[in-house]
Length: 67
Image 1 (cartoon, one colour):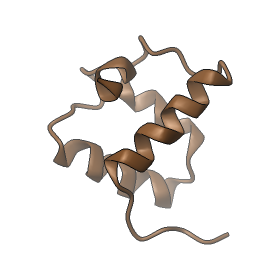
Image 2 (image 1 turned 45 degrees about the vertical axis):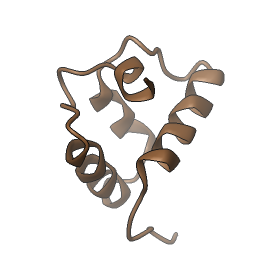
Image 3 (image 1 turned 45 degrees about the horizontal axis):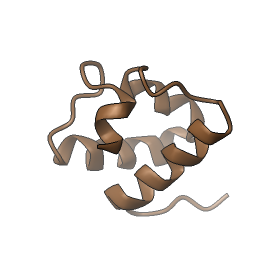
Image 4 (image 1 turned 90 degrees about the vertical axis):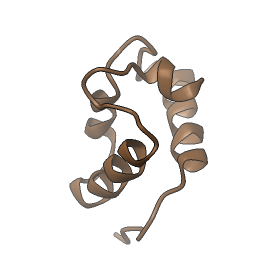
């Protein structure tokens, strides 16, 4: 498996929307719940990108991330 070196917020949002469409995620869940859908190496990069945009993984909801 290849691990990407970086993720844009746009790419993350697109993947989140896809997971919501599949009913794998509820938009009311905390952003941290996304971690279960990514390998740990990728999640560390995704987490950094999300936090760099001012979101808090435990406080903000997935819905907040998509707005």
